[in-house]
Image (cartoon, rainbow, N blue to C red; front, top):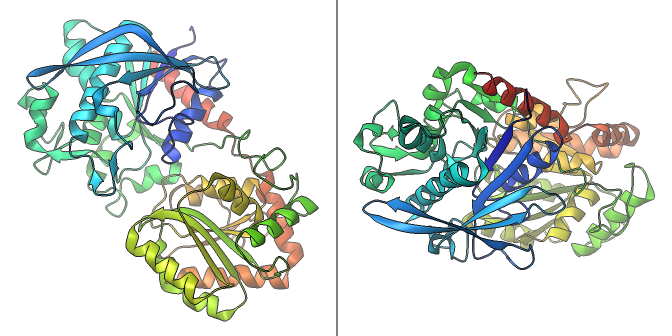
Length: 485
């Protein structure tokens, strides 16, 4: 069998855009597949992308996309994924000439439904007229209509009948739900607005449509694939995801080992290859200095780089952090942005406990790397976590994770109490402030009373293999299976 050609479709791809784990995953997996299959990528050409920096050029292709009762032009640009020969096609339109990807301070853009209908239909034209792939691999709700368009508007007319589709769910909480009166935008007819297709409690659900129409559905960890079939984690789609059976599989994301590597990281004041060397100690002192704290603090540093929201369990952190800081035996350094009420609470806690809690709003790439390298423990008290990337980054840097045992956190962290001989972190089960506070106390005691055991855990963390090659092998097997159908 010849190597398949895969067209990856995503609303964001690193390094052109960055809004979270989705962009990192879609930017990394094609590189891991190089040499095994031909890969091509497609995404919107947002105005926030520096076309000159990435050498993007306009092609001769312009597609006319039907949106409701009018036509919209899609101009196609092309570039390369930096550091590779992998082509990337960009869909240019007035829909993407905005200051942000999905919304602004007032909320999501009100025409997101229309924007991503346009994108999906334009990508389908790219597939047919430029790329001619064997498999189209879509990601999340913003590209989930591609399988729908293929099977409803192309294949019935003899077009791209052999193309197979994969949809990866990076976070089922984001589904692309819109009111039913947007259906005319799709130009597919009312027959797709039914419970077995796109209808979802009298709304249109783009992610649901992708799940129904795709030939295979994946998500980003094995545990999350199981959780998606439960009411607690399925966000209303658990029945559908349970019914599709083996069509849904979990394949854990990997880590970009070139970018997250303490031996070569340009953001660090000192590089290192083991957690008990002077390099990590220098990063620790640099982090304390950056946070405005005493560089000689011996209490453990708990670091966190996060979106500030309920999903990440920040409400649990807020409710216990004051008590933890009052004990005076640990330091907390938090970087993040998000929901204002929670961010304001973190800021108030930092003001109330100077020297123990440091909160930096926003995102700073250099500080993010320094927190991962200079902290002793890394906190992720998530209510749910499809895969989680930060715990794997932290472990690469010899920073021991303290996590809730959900999704990919459960798959990637081995609890020290359950497995004393090969534990790599501390886990807790209940989404309560008390459970989180108890595990932070356990970590603090371990760090203070048993430094040799802590260092051994840190070494195990750095030895853990989170390379993308494992995920690439599983995706290659999936692509091969689809190609034979």
